[in-house]
Length: 360
Ligand SMILES: NC(=O)C1=CN([C@@H]2O[C@H](COP(=O)(O)OP(=O)(O)OC[C@H]3O[C@@H](n4cnc5c(N)ncnc54)[C@H](O)[C@@H]3O)[C@@H](O)[C@H]2O)C=CC1
Ligand SMILES: O=C1[C@@H](O)[C@H](O)[C@@H](O)[C@H](O)[C@H]1O
Image 1 (cartoon, rainbow, N blue to C red):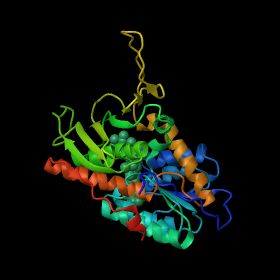
Image 2: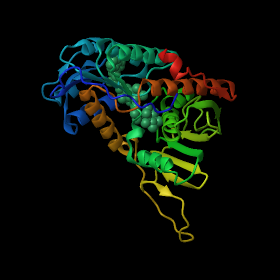
Image 3: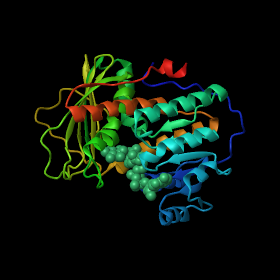
Image 4: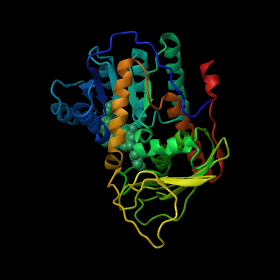
């Protein structure tokens, strides 16, 4: 089993649609951004349908896109014969049913993280897609781990692969949000925020996560009632490497996402607004200041663009070119262990099916 699966290119069975007709389900913060991206910046696709539980919201977003229809029922939108592909930006608890409906219809789906809310239901999606692939040779599911498309993360991964910093041993991550919406719980910090570092660790190191420990430092006075914020999360990989994550979601400041990889022969860091910064001796006492983004929409704007562009191009070729259902499942399995570790205060092993076993 590999942490980053290489998906086979599959032959195109049907003619490539001139413009991929996309339905966007859930047009809140992320979905409305995805509609705007597809409409203004991505060629080869058009937003044909939007669907949202809030009818007025769907109407407002559709009004911005000529020819876009509102289909109130999300499952009817997936079944619509004039829809070739789906972007899911509905709340996570609806993803399972909606992704399965896309697989059932045999149309590509880009599902925002998390793939589903539990590891078991994510594994169900892996199996449903595998069964579809066995019949058709095609993959359908991509998960919205957009950091893989961020140029800094891509360069950091290439740097590690080049051997320039030697074997990676330890990764230090900081993930800080200025604020989070009401309703966020300590568990959802693991499931909604730390899940990105889980995917980054798998992406950069090419190994699965074997165990998780979660510590609760003293909480900020800005944290909501009952919220443990920040959290310190330790991920141990199957190859004995360790990844520490400081996740702090109510800093009151700005959006800071940093990742530093420490290797046997050097270290490299991203997230400073300066590309990949390799450790080197500089003038003593030199202080450089950088501007940090206000939120994830600004910090990862290019990553979201590239994610959608690659998804559209791949969908038109009848394939997937990004993190797939297995990556979504593996991340959920780690988050499930993280939530258990949070509850018990103990190091918790990740229960992950073997990839080969799921395919047999
Ligand atoms: N990749 C990233 O950096 C980010 C990803 N996300 C993910 O995107 C998804 C959406 O998050 P936000 O846009 O922040 O939430 P949001 O609450 O702003 O928007 C969700 C929308 O879905 C609608 N909705 C509710 N039930 C629905 C259903 N059954 N079918 C279709 N739509 C339904 C709501 O009315 C709302 O307009 C989540 O899975 C979240 O985890 C969110 C923020 C950043
Ligand atoms: O996915 C995201 C949000 O759901 C989450 O709440 C934030 O912490 C992340 O930074 C953002 O990328």
